[in-house]
Image (tube, rainbow, N blue to C red; front, side, top):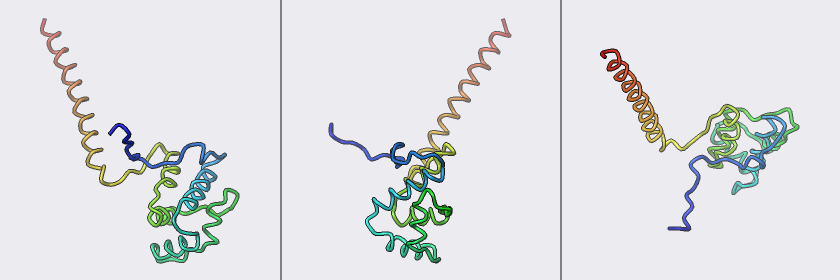
Length: 140
């Protein structure tokens, strides 16, 4: 058990791996890394994304999405298809990081709600204690 290392809840790239001068360039680097780690080549990725979207996605377009100098940036819908086909959420988390957000597996939503409820409960209890103290102080 001492050697056990749990898998990360939030999958993301190391900051240095996607370091770039702009959000678009960081996303392009993330896409390139996802392509490199995928168990299929870009032609197969394009075909699987096309099937997922019921729309044409070409290898040529995937190459452009991976280029930080290209005019073509991946759309949100195609980014979703890439994440779904590769099962790699890291490019999405690269983009979401810019807004201070993360994507986590849906199975953890109930735990997040529970933690939020606990935070709210603690805040209400603190407010109640402050009000009680003020009430006691005013009665003296």
